Amino acid sequence: MSSRDATARQLTFDELDTPLRDTTFVVVDLETTGSNSGDDAITEIGAVKIRGGEVIGEMSTFVDPGRTLPPFIVQLTGITSAMLVDAPRIEQVLPSFLEFARGAVLVAHNAPFDIGFLRAATTRCDIAWPPFQVLCTVRLARRVLSRDEAPSVKLSALADLFQVSTRPTHRALDDARATVDVLHALIERVGNLGVHSYPELVDYLPNVSAAQRGKRGLAAHLPRTPGVYLFRGPSDEVLYVGTAVNLQRRVRGYFTGSETRARMKEMVALATRVDHVECAHGLEAGVRELRLLAAHAPPYNRRSKFPKRAWWITLTDEAFPRLSITRRAGRDALGPFTNRTDATDIAATITEACRLRQCTRKIRPDGVHGPDCPDDAVGGCPAGSTPQSAAQYSVTVDLTRDLIRGETDRPLLALRARIEDLAASELFENAARLRDRTAALGIALRRCQRLAAVAAIDELVAARPRDEGGWEFAVIRSGRLASAGVAARGVAPMPVVDALTLSAETVLPDPSPLRGAMADEVRLVANWLDSPGVRIVRATDGYREPARGAGSWQEWCALARGAGEYAERAPHPRH
Image (cartoon, rainbow, N blue to C red; front, side):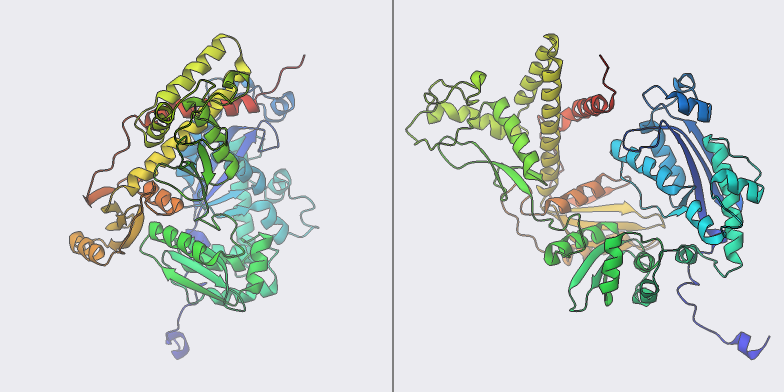
């Protein structure tokens, strides 16, 4: 061995990435009822998990699309409606697929099609789409192969070119197996060009400008830990804030072909440096991101750019209160709502169910409501035209407060009874509209009551097991994350808990439902507490939702909302 070979050298961060031979890929193919992911549905999923050139797992299943297959789809795939009669629905299949693919790079031939359908399905099923890295073999083939060698990059054409072991047949598993062979052949080609890790493979793909690639050094100093990153511009202004499980790897993605968003490329062109905040775990990163968004309002963040801006439904402060939509949450407010229209619609449903007044004229404390208002039956005020004193009207106001607090569900029961009456009278469209409004109200009530239950606890210390061993800890005070930390495997946890509690942020709550905390922060905390394996270490009070709150209505609301979505997607009969 020469002295030059024996000299130690520092590895570049490219060399620290997982080699392609050790990267797990899940190659997926779908059959569908058509080409529009918004309107059409998945009929078959086939997936093959590979690593190091070897198949380590396969998944294949039919999916009941809830409709008859078009004749051209039957002719193309050979799948008939009869074959799908006993197949599971996508709600049953999707969690299994996501678990099968967890932690892998998703690969598909014409990935925008297959991934578009999978993402649309997760949206319909109200499942969060995991942050998968996605590789398209069409794009890779077009980059690797010349036009002379491959005039077409259709799967059938590449199957002929590479003499694959499984022929594509327009059936999901066969096509996924064929794509595996194509992927291996393409990776063999790029390996000869010095591409040996997945980030290098992504960087090899087109649409990366020299200026974009040249800024990769901005990520060199970042750790490979969870945290928040901040892109800063020429005047040191914050351009963009994001979170990552691995800060260095996530930020490097902005300088490679994996970043296709035009706005992000524009942001990268302006960026001069990247700051970061290391975090103990994902919950702390999510909370710090929200707080930084509120502090800086970065121009390139679209979602959650103004986390403190929310709409609330509140009772006005007068002798004859009515509902008002405001930015400020009072003691018995209902919210939060991201847009005023949703809040207005929910307020109208509560007004109707509780028979509150909606007329806006001022009424003196010694006055009466009613004589000047037409009855609700003729399009007037829900409180009716019968004269009511402030004391008589207060019964309605108390009912509204009790509904929001979860101390009664009588208005929801009354709305459900009206739905049943309308349906019995064959006024199905009216019943469907009221069903959708009632479901929206029930979901809004449960959301507020759930978050308020978390915020009501003065101090809660919780622990969640880490995948690598040990524990994540969160000290939560009045719905806010006050401190966060970890105890690695083999470290005594209770001294860590004591230290975190002593160093936790002091919180001064207010009397609003969320006690002054940002709604998005309380939601992050509540979701973390609901995650598998979480344990309560200590608490000043127990978690409890109101006994007559909307929690018991969630199954009914989910069924009602599902029925409404199915009715919107179902084809209308032709007369």
